[in-house]
Length: 262
Length: 304
Image (cartoon, rainbow over all chains, first blue to last red; front, side, top):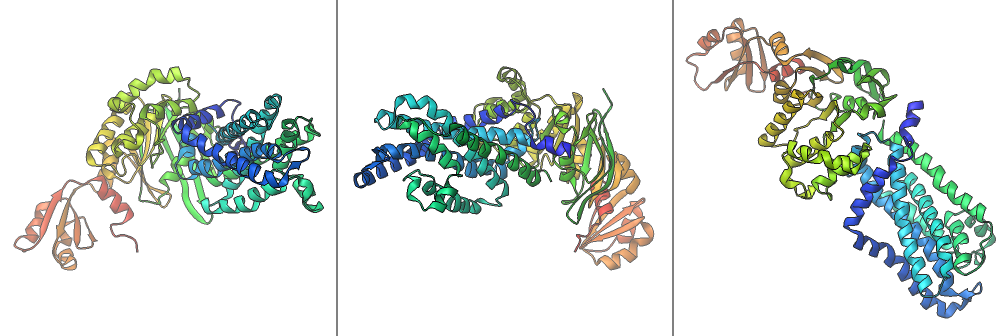
């Protein structure tokens, strides 16, 4: 039992870096296309919804609609970047490409691999969130002083969603199952977490459920600061995001052990 | 430094109700080339995985490089190089990048890796391909790169799962030549194969497996002597039943496989005499091979 645990956990605090560097090297070769992909989507939403809907909506919570939306898109950008990295790229490295198998033949453990993949997905989320934040600040939708505060939250958001997606891919037999996660979890979360409209617009029961979503916790940290206020309950939100990052990590590592090391 | 590289003691493994490895014991000495020989599904790959700590045995004891596995398999893996059954190189990386990335998994610094890469490229005869993408390499080159990659941590023990399956004869002979070079330099190799020629050429000793059980163990020559011990005559083109009764008194044993008769004949001339004058027969006399041993032990006819 003890050695089972050892196989599923990181062997030390630095083994994961080798996995991260492998992914970074692969990414460098396609960096331009990849960046375009991660950035285009949230920016299109930001300007499409922000300018279009913004005309009809006017002010939201004392800010222009596009400024309100910008914070939502930063968090959403991080969420989608790390979710998609995990459910498609990590899944193919785990199941189809033999990348994980090759690494498991070295002195790395399954835990080292999962941690490296998480860190990489969080890095991609960080890139996406950073770019949107900079665009928003440049256009005057966010305070520049909020940037150093927002970026760590973006990275933590990326970690949390990568961790959650890791559980999904540890269980999924094939790519077809990811559509359930996307349509039943990710997309509803976008609308329940205050990314595109204030949570206050939802019926009371939904509001209470929404408060637990990692995206809502992330947005509650990012939005007030981007709009020039102080965030409430900072410790609580960061604690919640950390839980979403850490607990699914251990669960997924245990599930991968069962799946790959029978 | 112990002179035992691998020790399996009464190892059993089943997946669900399917028994894959049954009470298997063997020992591989340091510097030895040991073969696990068996048809598909005999449990060879499962044994390879157990040696790496990637599959836990239900019972029995495994020791690899002096370390109990799977309990301390991470320590054992530091001294092991693996050539898996299917290439799992990074196709989008160059040959050199594949080696660098893999070296990092062993905690090697980039500088240290760059130091050993030239000799590995030379070993794998890939010097001119160092900066080619792996996706552009031939099957034989990929296999050689996989072998070079397995050597990046300067392992004492190499575990190879069907190292030449799917390769053309040229590529296969080059791999065999490279493996002999490694054996000469003192590495221990355990390989699984279903190529008798490969086992006969490379292995000091081998273990024949069938459905997870050991059915024979020894050096290729000893196995051939013990189980066959005389020349083999293959007769094709007649009525198997009729021919069998005709030559039965003159041979040690006859096996029928489809239309072909395999006769183990200590005195082949007597058999030839019996067959003289019969038209339409093709007769081939040859020394016995490991393949005869294997088929003798596991049965000539395909199981229904």
